[in-house]
Length: 134
Image (cartoon, rainbow, N blue to C red; front, side, top):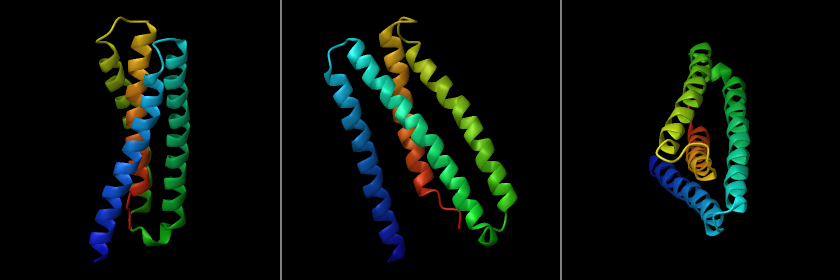
């Protein structure tokens, strides 16, 4: 029964997180292709980047708080730090690859890049929320 509850919670919260990001991006996309639309997406990217960093720190604190219950605390802590470092590099390259299908150094290019980051930051924040280490 508990497993079913956790599964349903996961599905429901994933849908809500994805819906919230889509709503936020749709608001930006609804604007005409101007500086306003670009700034909207750029601001959302910065907001989610900060939230991503905060959620990662919260996860580290949560793991540290429960240290006595984590058999491989040092390994887990090290893995989390290394994973974040690798993911940060990967997401930048992934989004650059997506942006590079467009003319470089244009607002559209940067909008594609920032939109990609928004989507990935939202997914990673969701991942941190659901990360189960015990």
